Length: 237
Ligand SMILES: [Zn+2]
Image (cartoon, rainbow, N blue to C red; front, side, top):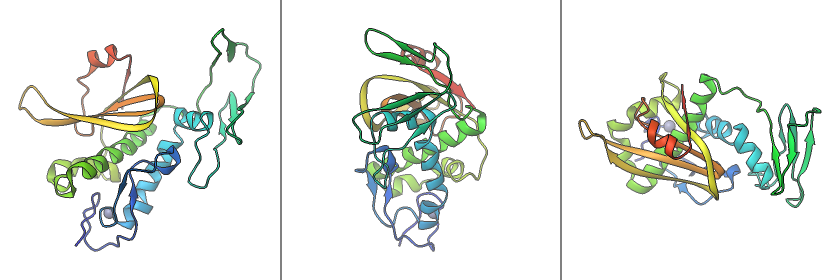
């Protein structure tokens, strides 16, 4: 008998596997087998969250820049208010500056600096969608590594509700840049908090030059100094 990792339904259908990373990020290896995520969650809210993540401005830019193919085999076009990018052949990037501002594109001896404004404001609403998309990946990775029973425990009931949009929440993500290109991956480590010794998991999402550190369970950020050392900005929502 199957119980859905997210809605805990035992009666929904379970006909599909679940890709932990949205396929359009270019990483297709990490998969949860049939019977872990019900079709209703998979084709409904999880697909909405995957789409939020892959179209997050910085990620869309990186997908186009590095010629990462979508599920359907094409490289997405990235169109922002000040610049648009295309990379159909994966050999040349067509860059169109939409306004005449000399600060948008500056040649340097190493290459160029490109300044652009994203399409979406990092509003509370958009940050929460991004966080939920990351929490989805986090919970699925824990399930892959530690099994469904570990993840079905009540410990993760709150994050399940948050991912499914059944509970409002606040929280934070730490965002910054990677020095090395790490195609796509999430690493995590468990640690005990000082007070009650509660075990938490801290995740690090890496995609090309983008790094996002997040924690599904702790709503307050206690990483202020750590984030600063790593050169990350703490965004609260
Ligand atoms: Zn479900």
